[in-house]
Amino acid sequence: MTIDRISSNERLSGAVTFKDLVFLSGQVPGDGLDVMTQTREVLAKIDALLAEAGSDKDHLLNATIYLKDIGSGFAPMNEVWSAWLSPGMAPARTALQAELARPNVLVEISVIAVRK
Image (cartoon, rainbow, N blue to C red; front, side, top):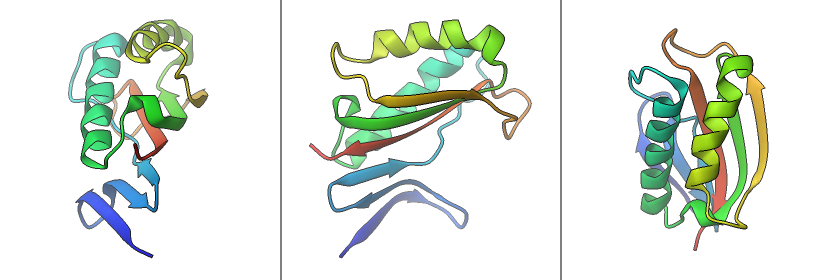
């Protein structure tokens, strides 16, 4: 059984594939100023990694969304998230508040998908 690693370094891989499953590490934005901009950046990174792994957003099984401040970030993140998803293709999802790796990161998203 082959495990493929995409965009790897000494600490992590951006994506790992095993059989028809695709696991993405948590994706974080650059230095976008607000949660909507950061969410768009993160989803663009997810799109690119899924494509490289042979999948896309319509094949998501699960998503975990980490927000620095769920009180102020949940609604604007959801607005971008909902616009990004294809109708009827929403994955199972968890959203929670968390201390994130850098102070300017407002959102981090990890997903699991199946290959097309």
